[in-house]
Length: 221
Image (cartoon, rainbow, N blue to C red):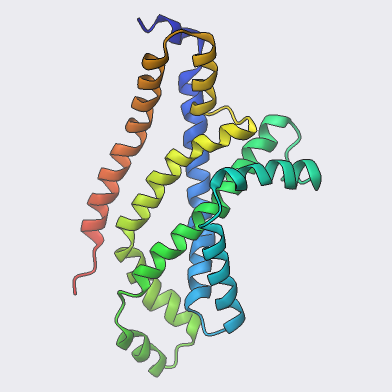
């Protein structure tokens, strides 16, 4: 029943999905943290930029962002992110698009964690002579990350599933392989079940592990 799978690189497609998810998660965490710092910062211009970015990007479909990176940045402006071949360019553009989109949700998850930190702790840190960056980096963010593990886990799971949108610009991940298999094989339900099972294998252990981590590192108040 599964003999036709031997003609397709199923593991390779899911490995591309994993690479997309990991690279995008790291980039989103970095950019999302910076956005969260802007949103709670004392500089009105940076606060306005962070707020505008999050509110705008969260309301744009991911497909539009991914297509913009390919049609707008690459084909119109010639941006190739240091890659030479078609596959590498599209892969990097997909990572960029996923980072731009997911970082908005990371920002909000972290901001919710920042809001759980008692104001008195920040005031006490400022009374000791710490500046804003020191208060944020040494006092607020460490506790915010611990409080945000659960929401960040949900963002990561959504990111893993959102990698399927990269198929729109030809990235050879699981969704593109699924489309090819459906076009070539008369096994729609079976192919859908195999791909769905693959994503369950990726997301379910991730959610369970991060849920366990969240309970372990939760701040006791």
